[in-house]
Structures are given as C-alpha cells and as structure tokens.
Image (cartoon, rainbow, N blue to C red):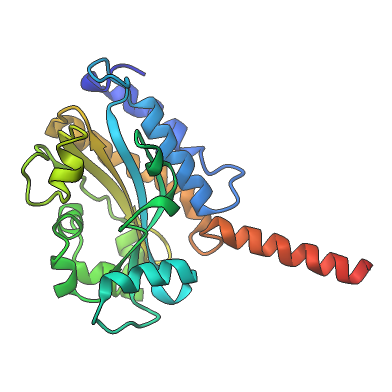
Length: 261
C-alpha cells in the first residue's frame, strides 16, 4: 500500500477488501477486532516517521452492557464512576483491541484507564469530550448510544455514519492526555469511524496519527466502517470476548472428562 500521506481511492478499496475478510475463522469479536487494529497499524505506513508507521495507536471499542462484563472490566468501570449508581443495563465503551508503538498498547488488558468507560447518562458523557464529540461527529445522539430504541435499531444499523476527525490534535480540548500522550508521541491528527451493530451497540475504531490527516483523506474512511462491520457482525449476538470461548472450551472439556471418566 502506498504512503498514507498520499492515500487514494485505490488504497481504500484494497484496504476495505482486506478488512472484510478478517472475521473469517475468528472465534470471537475480540479476535476479529485484534486482527483489524493490527491490519490498520501495519498497513497504513509512511516514510515520514522513524517507525515507518503512520499511526502511533489504533484501538477498537464497542459499547457493552455493564452486567455482562467480566469482574475485572466491571471493577474498571466502577473505578471511573465513583459515586454514580450502577445498573446492569448501563452501557460501557469497552476496549476490545489495541495496537501501537508502545509495547503496553498491544493488549487491551494493559490499558490503564480505557478498559471499560461507563456511560451512565448524557451528563456523564459530556465529561469525556472525545467520546461526546465522536458520537456527535458520527451523526448519532448520545441517547442512541446509551439507550438504543428497539424500534430504531434497524434504521440506525442501515445508516452510513460520518467519521470522527480532529485535524490538529496538539492543543485540542477534545483530545485528552496532551502532556503524557499527544506531545511525547507526536500525535498530529485523530481519526475514527464506526457503525451500529444489530444488537444496537456501536463500534468505533479510533486511530492516533503521527502525520497530519486532511479532511479529504479522513472522509474516505467513512466507507471502511461497512468493511469492519462485516468482519465483526457475525459475533454481535454471540461470543464477544476471547475468555468466553476459553470458558466454553474448558466447560466442554470438563463435560467430556466426566462422561468418559
């Protein structure tokens, strides 16, 4: 693929074709998501950085009900909520996969504060400018994310969403961790894209670029949301996390041992 600085429609078509196939033979949405962030991180290259990669960090998030998260993720969400009440239906923006130049960024389990971000109400979401702007720039209402209306899910699912784009990340009030992330890692722009799944949950791929991304290039990524959706949609009502498949396999092995022992 050509230098990302000169990203073209032909590159978009090639990348979309690759992304659509990344769910094949995956056993969970987490596995498919990890393939997706690794693909974007590895294939979007540039000659203008020391690593040869255009992005310092690529992450895949999905909203997920608090009550169905594992204990570690629930604790992570509760540590952010502090005094807010918790309900099992509360949506959490949950990190499914991560890839980047810092070794600690290559596993979702190493994330310090983004494993599961609770979204209890509109007022709380406003406290996270990047999340609220992402929702707004996608063309969604915060209420669509927090409380997806069953009557509206099909309509939302069929919609084509805009991209989330911050052209100048340095000094932007939308992008957090300016001193600890944006400045030391030379983040120039931020780009995100996503869609609504049949479950009513949304997914978002967020990429932090070390080169400036123009509005024209950012807009091309709108169509990649469908390619990613095709890769992860088979798991929307099935296995989300890898530990679910591991638990299922362990249960099956235990069952087999009991009936054959």
